[in-house]
Length: 331
Image (cartoon, rainbow, N blue to C red):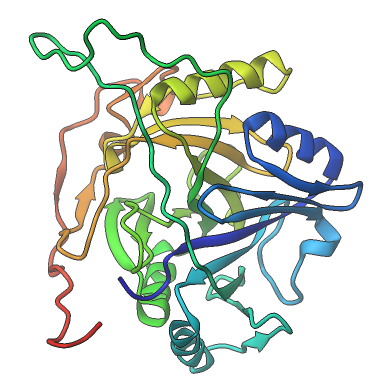
């Protein structure tokens, strides 16, 4: 694969660094260093989570407001891809390169971002075999007992923006992101070209009539990948035992991406999501367009008022979108 291969670093701007450091430690992220002014976590795939005071994390000129992820550093596999992406960026926006070679810029929504060479490590899970009626895959064998969640990947970020279509088109044209799915009236899912994760970013329409949506550009949540549904709930139970606020939606599975989800309120801003068992895509995928409520869930532990009634089964292919075809000899 070529191009951006995922999220290399997310940088949080927060009110209370020690509190947020404790939160993400309990959440299961591996802590590397921490003091009163900053913290660094590094996941097994090589990605990083940085915690800083908000004033130290804000980029001049950004339109993003509030606490949360102030900057996403996107990874590329080598310097050749880095230079190619930077050249495209410079056609549409100002780009600065720091002493370590990381490119910094503002995207079309005024959200700070970066490009950095990222030798991403492959992570292998070993989920327990699953038994079902008449289909035995685990015989005379107990399931693993885990003590806590241990997220190994950063799978995606979500931002609230005024015009998800414009955001998607910018990332498509400039960074070569792929369209994954459209949640009609709500937002757009897109995948970085060098990853198979269903989506690397989701743009949520910022003026929807829900709490926390006020028309402004804001961070919504980040998703951290774990092995299976057991690990999701073990993490949720541990967080509750440590005194952190419980999930509003509870455990569920989205229809879009088929992923298991559990969102937890996060003192660093927005929510932190445990995720697993998501669809994986490549360039042969044809994007779908979904009724918003229908695409949100297959099931959800705590039904919300706006989705209490059964949604119409409404999903189809996006008109005019075909799989990406590479030119012969192109890599």
